[in-house]
Length: 580
Image (cartoon, rainbow, N blue to C red; front, side, top):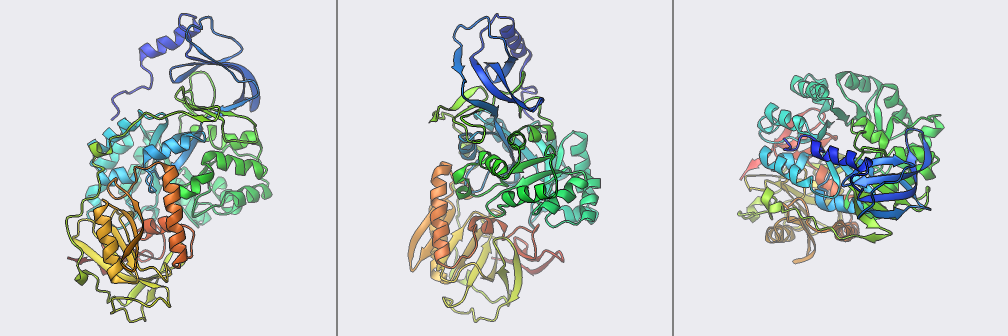
């Protein structure tokens, strides 16, 4: 649990009152501010007083005491609340610190994060210590509590135990249960998951669904079981169906589902003119997708698509805060709220020229202020990946008659292997590659053939995966071994090899899952990787998500998991993993 139960202690609250009484000066005075008042749904003029990290007054008055106060004339600017990203997977090569820093520069100052990596990689006490440390960053972070691993892992019952889930749900920084990727098990009668949902509701916390393609009947059932929101609507009609069943709808625009322009168009064509039960998200996209912004980009898409500007800003701020029951702290510029404020040059341009988070300047008049915060990741067990075992040529035996065929980045179907794969090298005339998932501790492996990933890829190794185990792909076994050995040397990451040489690598020094580099650098590294893979036959848009979802059993039709080759639709292991 967090040591500080309340955001502001009693003595702090008394100091805030003394500012209004003229005993103390505010730290910052924003004069002549035109700001978005979301209660009255209009742009209004006011003076805004800020003390430490809190807005202590919004109105016509000016402070009696101004000693040491920074006075900022906001004439000609438009002030909106700091944006909130409600669906962050803060481990898509970047880490929670680097992503939050990058996000804050374009005005996203509050993040609601998936807890999957910290849940699986750290024991509970250390995980909660990390959450406490992350509270010291200039941005605000909240978290989810996952109810299932999104794949078939060994010892799932002990990892996703009742005591672990209950402790996470009780944590002050956790705002929701989910996302419910394991909802089919819930519908099939999983009463433990249903109990966790009941506990979350008892604690006034929300339940995030994950219901792609769900029928009206399924949506109704999941609402009855406790779901509050879903982000998987891919058409205007699906948005409408969710609204009709009582859901809040999170409109997605991500690297694998850039749907927002279509959704905005279609919901308006359906006559939907009320947007208070909707908000927007980027669904934990990979670095390159964020080159043009984060929530500011989504607001711009909404405005350009015909949604009124006030509604567009609300869909990235107050709507989210209200849904998560944090309106008393976030999502609007009003007395008592955390001082997260974006300063715009134009109402039609949501990318701020200045950003304030927790009462401190992140960016001022386009100048980025230095970030002196530091997270010692090694203190929390996020060290370079240590692989103290060797991959032998005998491990690279591919005799399974059953392979995986990629339909797109994330959908995989089974297929019968007809090619002779007994050689050390496959032909470059087809799009079949050797594929191996191997335990990061070297205890087990599963070998098969993948069709549709590439046709000219010699060797490829990645410790970035849904389970944290190691993926090997390639046409040439020699290059696959080279990629693996280089991955060992750099402490984890993504390595591409060709004809005996390493041609590209992305070191992921935080347990082989995340980088410690700024997002700006990762954007370049990922763009280089995508181009290399595209040149070698990768025909889709997001190879990073492909790596993540090879083992993700919330998607059809077949997956490769620590337990073996898994049939998602029938919920059976087709070919078990082999112990080494």
